[in-house]
Length: 120
Image (tube, rainbow, N blue to C red; front, side, top):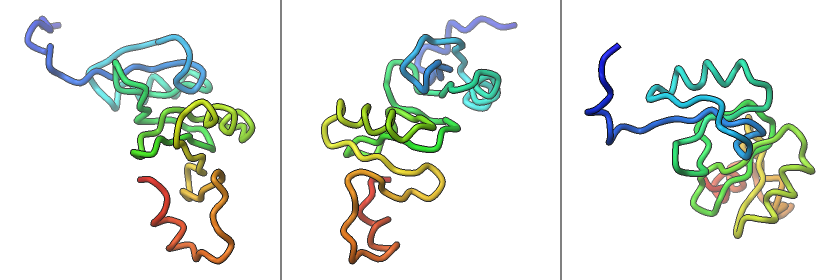
């Protein structure tokens, strides 16, 4: 295996336990490798090293900042809502559909309008 001396500016990915809040279990310069390793750890997530931004998770709900960066994910809605309260301007949405869970969208919005209001 070659020396990594010239890899200093390269993005590193961390596999973290507890949906991105726990200890780091693995670090890699390859996102696909980190994603594969994360699949071996139940409830883990992949984030960019040195940030709180998740780039891969398998949980049902995600907490996103106003800028759209996912900072927490969990399969339990109550856990996601509790974490969202600790992040200013955060929203909770379903991972698959992007449907906002909190804040609750206005009742007269169509699905297209609701998606346009959600951070990417």
